[in-house]
Length: 286
Ligand code: F3S
Image 1 (tube, rainbow, N blue to C red):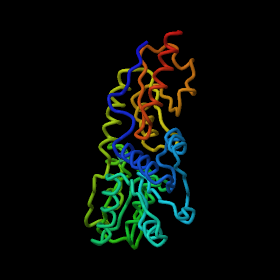
Image 2 (image 1 turned 180 degrees about the vertical axis):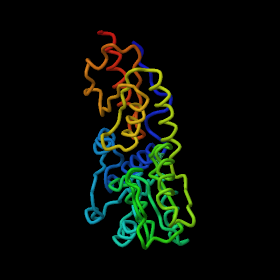
Image 3 (image 1 turned 30 degrees about the vertical axis):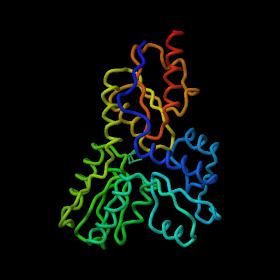
């Protein structure tokens, strides 16, 4: 049996940058709190906790400690509250997310309604939404597209959550326009997809075409890991989404000659290595 790694997987530059900034800040300052989980990966969060990072859920819990904004970013109201509290802020927002936030702000300032394609409960989406002043709507899927609210201006700007797939975003934009052609005078589409994510999705697709079993490694709350599992399944490979090597069931491997491994952008190398090592061990025992 062959165990094959996807050509692009694991930590993206935005997560690597955020984790390194937090590690450095903890080392230099002795204590640091992060506003929410650093990334959607429990293993990364646990490692940083051991190094001295505490996770808080509200600015009020910071006391006088320095506060890190995570890679997913926050809305302007959180920035204002942090400024008012006077604490030191370490902003690790991924530059790709910052770009989306700036687009949301600019579109509103130019009089566009903003339609945001993504999960309304995801931290990145909530943050970007906050930067769009005025008319803003978050829609989670193409199937949920309907007529835009009556009071929306006829100029509409569309952004996507950075980790969406190209195919889903394209289908969403098409549907939005078709469903509102009588109302929209101008449709401005900003390609806010993250290249690191689209490259990982392409590599996953390529690999899933070559194997019959795919193991996708990453946090269960990680949007981009979940999207990788969807992509792998759509290619026809039997697919399992796991967080750690312990979850692998030996029975999954029966009857498969080639097994692919891919991982989300918030999955650290050591977790991927443990998964590959476990699969190799099980393959030898077959
Ligand atoms: Fe940034 Fe893309 Fe990673 S948006 S955090 S580089 S998945």
